[in-house]
Length: 317
Image 1 (tube, rainbow, N blue to C red):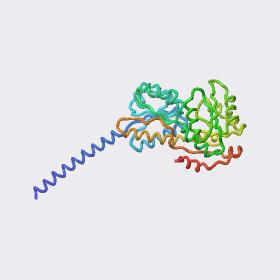
Image 2 (cartoon, helix red, strand yellow):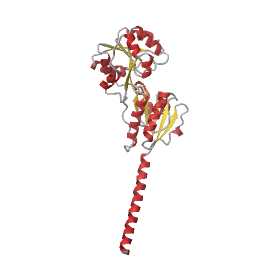
Image 3 (tube, helix red, strand yellow):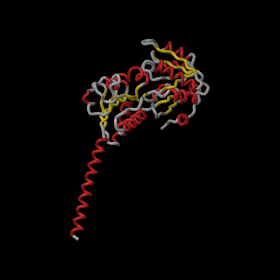
Image 4 (tube, rainbow, N blue to C red):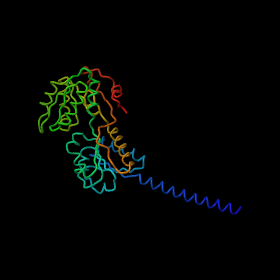
């Protein structure tokens, strides 16, 4: 009887020690998976804050710590403990790129033209650190598809860009051709007035496709651009809900929440994949369509409902 009790006690002690060892090991694994991520915002405006809040919420659920910082006055010390730094907007990306770090960098809510035109080289420090991006722009194929769905009679699409964007124009032209659409385009020279090139495009186009080019679309030019397009009776396809409210007939856009969700999914995947590797730069996965019904009535357009267009495009998620 005594021998049996001693054997049972010994077995229980061994099981308790094993249980404690497994618990410590599990805690160690959990701590190893947890990481600190720095999110740098261009400023305190609502779109950037929304991206940060979505990223923070998603990563906090998985035990990761998210630190917020701003482009102005960004200090290297604020980033030293982070396994990954995320820049929200161009100003944040430029500020982050200037830091003497080897921390991998992800830029989100940035135009593809900025990334291809030099942003990638600065973020990666000439290839010495990992860098990638989630663009603000929609993929050209998706833009061409919605034009065909919403404007089945359209033949020519107008595009106005700043100088030095041959890759963007070539990709748009290829995508539009797949939908049997031609492209009419003009480049806006630095310090040139908008009206001349804009009117040349509008005079020969059935639709104006807006691209996120700050030289073309900004707070100083938007009103003039929409008034001129309205005078020519040419609808505008925008790239944000704010452009729809401002006068675009419709917009194909990814909200800050969409971008934040995609960024969080990327980050979580990267942090849990062993050696840290960033996905290649990409266009947004999640998107919506918004229509300005007042502009549609004024210009005499009857468009499919937003939900129908989103469904046909595979979006609205």
